[in-house]
Image 1 (cartoon, one colour):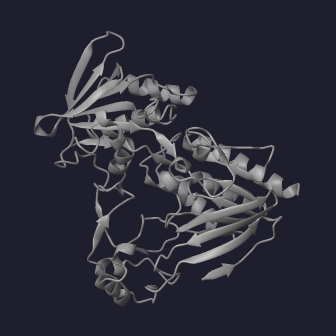
Image 2 (cartoon, rainbow, N blue to C red):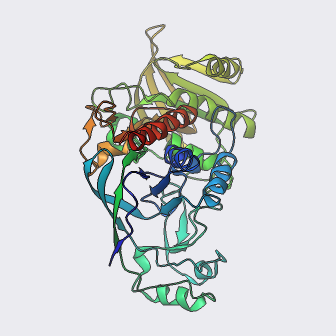
Image 3 (cartoon, one colour):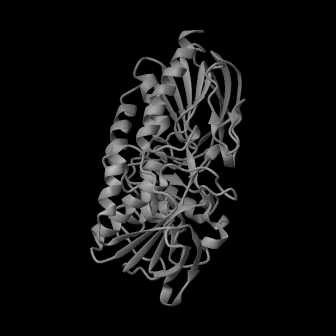
Length: 424
């Protein structure tokens, strides 16, 4: 099915990616009068921020910032949100781009009240991608508690099975449409902003750090989900192997970052994320010992430096300057971390209950190139060509950044997109 809903070429902006950068770009442009199409491949908006327990600078839960943005979104008729949607083609020139979008079926329409009857009827369970596979969810699910749009999704795995029929029969509002087809939409827009965000680097590629082979070795994003109240353990930080509280935790910095074999650049957020997560552990378990293995602690700016000094002053947190050489399985579900102490020159080994790998951020465009005429760095970040104009990259699609920097950058890219329209 094809729907043509083109907007005036000189008055509309396409934003690709519905994370915090994409939301900010869309809202800033729409609130000064421009029509915006916001396209997101997931069935929900919020991106990586939605998966966090807390984020800087105020250590707010995601609900804090996202709730405000979702309210602004609901109140603004100039923004058209397309979820489960992917841009398949962008062609043209600044002020006049032709865009094709594929919209995948949710199998749940706008009549959904998020009552949950379909999930109650569904018997199939699937891995929760939102929780990095650390728990199972029903094949009919709400992505997270305050998901936008607030509609359930039927996983493709259950379509054509008896479970799909059960979901349809359980729905009192005729919101389940098992015959919902994929659609294509063709748009005419004046400017495009790619806010396609980042993905955690695949820790399984870092052979010496044992992820996927050594039990009780997790990534920093998995730690965020463990600490989150809506996570797989309702906010309790527990060892995956036996669901016991850890008496000792090791954080391994630069797991795949600043490494020519993996990500040669600094991912900017990893040091601060581990410092924050050390406090998660300390808040839950006052007697738990924490060791942070690092190359350099990078805490940019006065506020982050003060936060680092706060964690460094905690008597239960030990910093070891040295690159980790190996993470290996030890008896009783424990994990041994081996590193060379860069200060003393000695080889050191420490056995702990839980290891957290500070994996870096890889731009999504490095994994799947985008269907537009874009320039990239060797690492897959999109290069902004301001002289050419028309198409821009915001947030972590452009460079590694934290939430506040991404928001600031997204506001600037909204302005660049508006300038494109205003000068054509």
